[in-house]
Amino acid sequence: MLSSAQKRQKLKTYIQDPGIVIAPGCGDALGAVLIEEARFDAVFMSGYAVEATYAQPDAGLLTLPEMATRAAQICDAITIPLIADADTGYGNVVNVNRMVREYERAGAAAIQLEDQVLPKKCGSMKGKNVVPVAEMVGKIKAAIDARTDENFQIIARTDVGALEGMNAVSDRLAAYHEAGADLLMALGPYSVDEARTFISLAPGPVAYLNSESFTMPMLPSDELETMGVKLLILPLSLTLSSIHAMRQTLQIMRDNKASTKAYAAQAMASWADCNRLMGIDAIQRIETCFGPSAG
Image 1 (cartoon, rainbow, N blue to C red):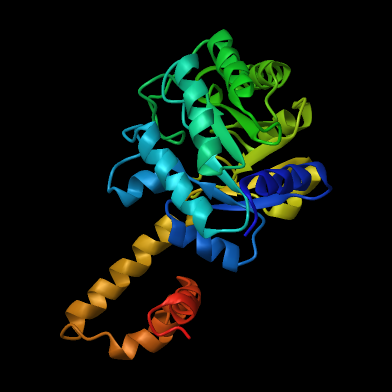
Image 2 (spheres, rainbow, N blue to C red):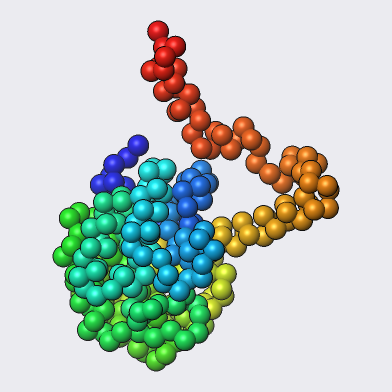
């Protein structure tokens, strides 16, 4: 198992090297294990996805301790880097300081920090607003000051485009880069041409969202790499697909007198495969080596 410091170094190297890093999103450790099994470079802990595990909307309802605890659970289950959604930093610059320390302690390799006001909204929803540039710059600087590992990366996101247009996006990304953000991100809505423009004008590495909210163009990774994007995040795919799959299974239960036997072989992971994925072999090894019956 890699240490947290090694995971942070790995992610930083990925960002610095040629190519694009692809990080599917999840809301729990099971999703993260599946992402690693599928051989992706990193995991994104989506605030939307975590709140969905509580059956809550993405409206900033969860607190820092809840989110940091979930991050720690995920980091404990995987050997690849975790990028954690930190929303607005959960308050002012003092809260941002604590947030960075908590996410570092949890083992995260990076955080995404956005410039919405509190209470925040999902970036794809209407009615959001943003703080002044100076306030967000202060949060970025506070985050940088709080980190104890220089490889812990800060992704600065702006949601200003929906309010003030793409010129304001470029201005904010420039200010956030100057403040020291390691990567830059902008939420839509915007067109493919507008995406090309702000990415080309960005003064630092860009992170991009391929989201099934479709408020931004969903573009192939090779095209985004050509445009200069370094990190591609898919925040909602696993959450939305799992809802669809669970609904199908529940309907089959209703239609087949509560039996899933015929359906299981074609559309479910096996019980044995699930045990393997959860790490049963490691548990059995410990029992064999150190349990009462050990020699």
